[in-house]
Length: 273
Image (cartoon, rainbow, N blue to C red):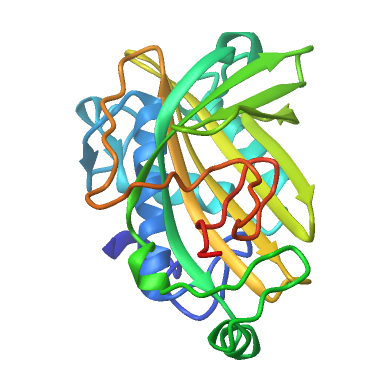
């Protein structure tokens, strides 16, 4: 990560597309995922501190940093398009697969990275009160953050730039909602009973099929409650995923009579009734 540090990514003025509110650990995690993505995009799975186009088939630190500058530009959509052009100009690679090639079932993991619950809602939970949707917020975020939760979803294109996504998880009914596809990115927004969830999946082709590195960010109670999670999956190869130790309730579940804040594909941990 020294190259990113020297390029200013870890300082007080990182590229506009790299959230300035992130803690250092979170920035390192985001940049690590980007490095993996670029290695997959270029087919160069080793990094070299040398320069030049070939560098013995490795990805140079110089190219890695330049790719990140494009990818995390202030104008996110233009930045991703510039990143794709950089890959094509520099390596002769067409970065993004066609949506039709992404159709079918994906298997992966969802990992909650942060949960924010304001003090007034914690106090409400301590008093045994629930909100109008039956949620009480009586949880300890530490028991959920960092745990791997298996997820399965399928993509059914209705054209070259849109389609329907269906989320499935153990013990719950399938949940379906529309998505869009542009510049290699699947996006979906779900609204239900005061909750808003935004899903972003960055798609790439690899040696065994396709993979995505993405995120699921949700808010509830007029933005007071916030949950952020990473969502990574593969298609075209078996993904051996086991529930985290002690995890008996899937993080993505359908609406029930005693839920946590939910969307059509719930991103909040199940609460006690």
